[in-house]
Length: 166
Image (tube, rainbow, N blue to C red):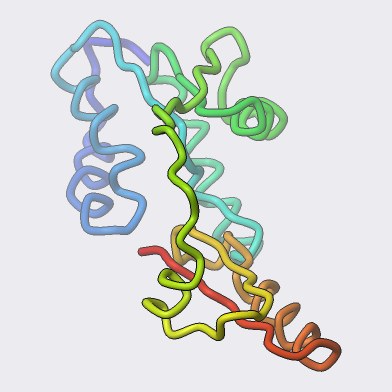
């Protein structure tokens, strides 16, 4: 696409998709392209298409993601898996993507206060706790954790599940 032409259809994307749950995946890149910003870097933390979606919906999102590659100068993937997913599905060109892992500072561990923490969460003092901290989205597979916990409860006493997230 020429940097001097701005197809009218892109304005429809900008108007519709910022209200859509994946609008953040494209609004910034399109706005940068429309404003002729020379470098548009996108950090890949998730893709618009997910395995739980219908085949039609996945194909629409993949077409959109591939189209956005034309207006994206570089990508940063937060993991090798994110890079591989995008490249294998021809969403972006491999030469445009660099992996930079998420980094966190891990504070020095304090001795666990297991009993106090269990009481604060309303959990039994001696049971097995299965838990996760995740985004509460179908793609995270939390239904499998809940199902697995139900199976564990039939075989073991005092099994509890803790799910935390947003």
